[in-house]
Image (cartoon, rainbow over all chains, first blue to last red; front, top):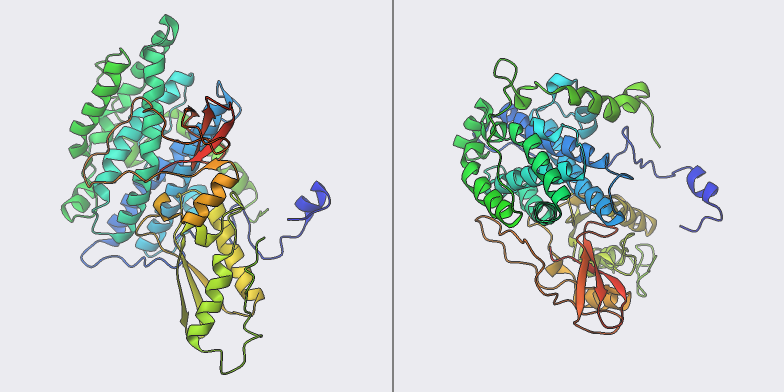
Length: 295
Length: 186
């Protein structure tokens, strides 16, 4: 860039109107992509579905970002940061798609920063806090195994934008799942202490698993139209992959009843755990305090 | 920033030379020479992300395929293409995103692979074939087939699954002991 001093570099007027934060000028990740809703598909349903998958990625990404400067080794920090960045990219595409599909033209920033907790549609496993490194590994393994099975099927979606996002996401999440699986094996099949931590991490995450395979009415409708994937279909593949990893890791899947929702409502209905409010406060506070801010 | 040696600006063209075809070719030469800010030895042509340039109603339309969903370098490359073409007189310019088919490291050119190795980064091997079915799990690192970019030895070992960017992992050479990055097959 050729600045004489670091101060000059950061204080320079960014001449072309591009900005890295929320606000005006942020490049639309779907610039130039045909975002017309396919014939016969309900745009409101499609937008709701994009928000589900987009919120999963956004909230999981934010929790992973909280590991920055806290991971046990620099290499693991780089890994978690890169996984978070991949998911943030998927979230940007999916939230942008939602704003086009429902006809409101809302941007990714509108969805990320201006919605309240009850409007977020992420599954609850993405929002819960990690007690230790084993916890983030167990959570990442469950999440990426489920999401990879989902996106692999979504590559055949009748919506070309969803199919394309899934096609790229599959390649990314393959690496995320391998990373988590290899680490869980190291922890489970490691020392007595690491094994105990791995057992505890699985116990903490299993109550949130049933919810991953429970379709909402929107998902069932869109799956029937060939647009979405019915998550109930993913359980077999999920169990198979987990069994393979757990057997190598000398671990067992703990039997656990799913964590009940509030009157049957869970993350997909906008009903979240206590952790979600704190996460959103961190994610949204600057954007809400300084809605015109750019840098 | 690398500039192609034979860059032609719109102003330099004689009126009869400025046909739609020659304008597109001239624009292509500029766009393809834009460098990746993360891997500055590579141009858009080397990466294989420049898909198409067309002329639509006097507007130059450049189509790029993103590498990774979250790659921040994409934003910079889109901006650089826009700025370089505008500066060369090709206004108005529009940069479009093409999501499908998804980018693969197989699209990195032979020249790009040579430049990566010369910069000490092991280039990717062939990307895994993707079927429509379930994606196989990799639980242990297969013996490394990656050559050390410093000494050429095949006696190398992967030391980390991710590096400074999502597209690379880390290796170490068992012979010359050099640690190096490798572009993951994607």
